[in-house]
Amino acid sequence: MTDEERFIDLEVKLTRQEDLTQELNEAVYRQQRQIDELQALCKMLMGRLNDASGGADAYVHEKPPHY
Image 1 (cartoon, rainbow, N blue to C red):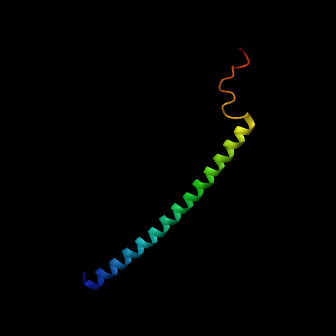
Image 2: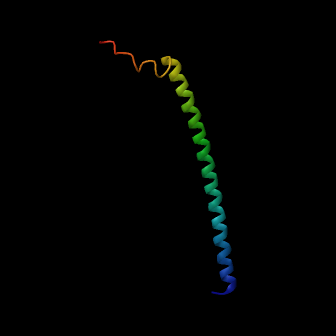
C-alpha cells in the first residue's frame, strides 16, 4: 500500500467517523428532547392526580369503607 493509498484510506475513515459522530449527536439530542417532554408530562399527571384525590396522602390513613 502506497502512502497515497494509506492517506486516502485515512480520509475515508475520518469522514465516516465524522458522519457517525453527527448521527449520534442528533440521536442524543432527540432523546433528550423526548426525556424532557416525558418529565413534563409526568409532572403534569402528578399534579392532576393530586388535584383529583385532594393530595396523594389523603387516603393513606383512611380505612376502607367495609370497616
